[in-house]
Image 1: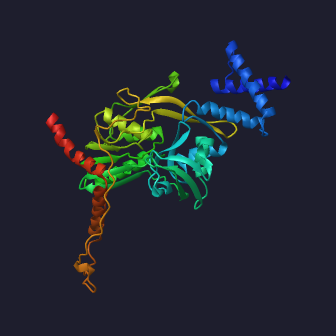
Image 2: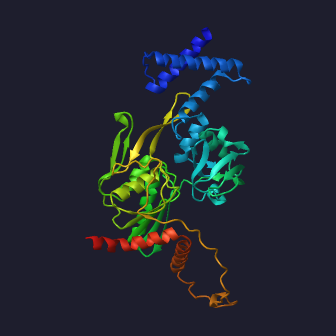
Length: 429
């Protein structure tokens, strides 16, 4: 009986800590006491009679994990190593596969692969199910355990059993771990003055990287239009999504957060700046556009600042806080829902584009017919001055832009919209 009393005391302490942030609150209701007594009794029975020897600490930690995981797919208790890895996602270098995952009905799903990572190159796609990691089924693990197992030393191989989104049977993929790039912004000029800017994630310097890309474009042929590509962007830091949105807005709401208590309720607003982008903007989205990237798309759409093109987004409309605990472990807890400027929550709904355009895989490229040019002839005369290096570089970039457009139907359509938006606005006025 003494042992049960000790377990009850431990359970009470844990409940008080989680519910009140460390502040003791009296439990007066008989129903609450009965629930705690039942918990301690079951804990005692399992510890004494379960077929395998399980420590008291393991049982309590598993009970806490189970409680959090049943709240929603994003709340969880992390070990010290898992908590450190979570922080590295946005602030430091780490090695792994490079995919954003979530838990859906007990199944690990790929939200989106991070561009230029081993997972992306291996062919993992949004909507794929990861059934096993190195032979262990993921249904037996927590989400953070799956993430931890997929990471490892650079150059080592992880084996994944994957059911592709439209696949009939699972396939085994052996992927060599590598550094996950923290660079989150890519850009290229598609046509003079019209720029493709790709945000792969929202890490600690995304807004700063985007500002640099915009300044480079201004210094070149200027800004006539922008295609902001948020496809397969799994999200990241809330503050970075706000700063990115602010670069395209001169005022008004960007996003609002609403939780249970007043302290968690905030409204983020845009501020005018001389660096604000004023040219037409088209935002590309798809099913891999999630979380922070949906905040940006929602803000620009609701403020009528951009045209949204592509496919319905993922639909993650909740905000998680990382809470460090005294023993080095951490708690990832959903504390609020976020809402677009119009007051709409996209949780489980996603953002429906203004123009829904499905992705069409490029047709197989045929081998070009043999054709000779002067430069292909042996012994041809070189230009005496070596040619204009800048011109050669510009030609290479133009050719790469043409290849991108030829292989991406959504990007082609987005560029056309960016070019015609000024004319459409004049017609409305």
